[in-house]
Length: 470
Image (tube, rainbow, N blue to C red; front, side, top):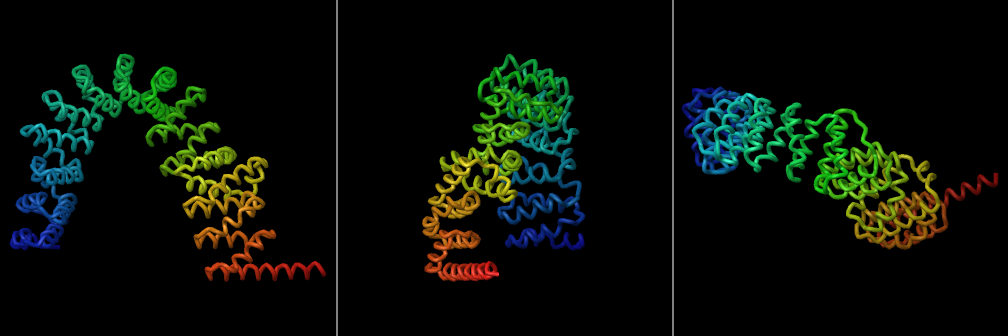
């Protein structure tokens, strides 16, 4: 531990060294020290240092040193004209958390609207309701729209129930505030907030309805759930996705059953096909109760785009594998961007229980799937070609051997090695003929491996003949 007296003697020379590395090391050495007011005040000035490394060091030291006075000296830098310094001060105050609330609250009154907004944003992110009274006071007295919107958002983040009546008043005062107020009410919750948003729904335009629908996922009740189901018959396309998300949230909250009729199916399909990931996740969660081929096919079209979505879709595919095999030929023909992901999913499914799955396929299904895999043999992606070859031999060896010449022409060494591995386990004349060709491959690794496999097969055949004679 560095002695504080020694720090006081040497600190100035070290901190104001021309060498940024020395400044950084000195600042970092103070991270676990008990600091006096002078040192804290000096350290805070380094949020304005021109060197990024020094700023990183002061970020660490001020964020993690336990001194309670750091926010008191740091808060004034939220007024810095340098945006980087201002943001750094804000980040540190946010990391300090509730211990920074009182200095920030005390700093609000005598500063510009920009500073007020900046501080209120941080207080909202900290999320401690003890700053709610001050933020509510700013909302009641300030005339700047940006500050007011920051107050509304922060009060929502704080879940500050004492703000409800003031938010209701602000809703009527200015249309600009309404979407943010609805979002805040959704975070605050309570029956009072729910009754208010529902009273406004029918009279508002789609933008506000969108916000109200999203808030119902948080504050809605069972009645709200059935209201949203009924709205699927009435609303326009942009509102479908938030309705599906809120239906999903309320279904889980109240353990309700979603009716799977044509309107619900259409809404789920539209959300899966057209919406952003957060709405797609809600829609895909809703399919878990239904075995609908059209919906699952829509899910396959987006498989591989988002890991969380994939983790929802995959179990459903494994429950209903025939839907995948029915959809696969048409999907592959379209050359989708997620072709590799679809082939990987198919292989994983087959690997889990290949005999049972393949035996469930009708002859025409097996032929269609095999034909779709043959289309992949010309794909520019070498991994797609390799996986297609493997799947083709797994599904139908008789079809696969018809395309051996094309497989032999693959210019990728590892793909030809994979073909060797597959051919080694096949007792068909076409396979042996291919192995003979590969024994003359210009790549020594291929030719030697092919010769070894042919030798093993000849030994096995000889042993079999001898056993037969016995």
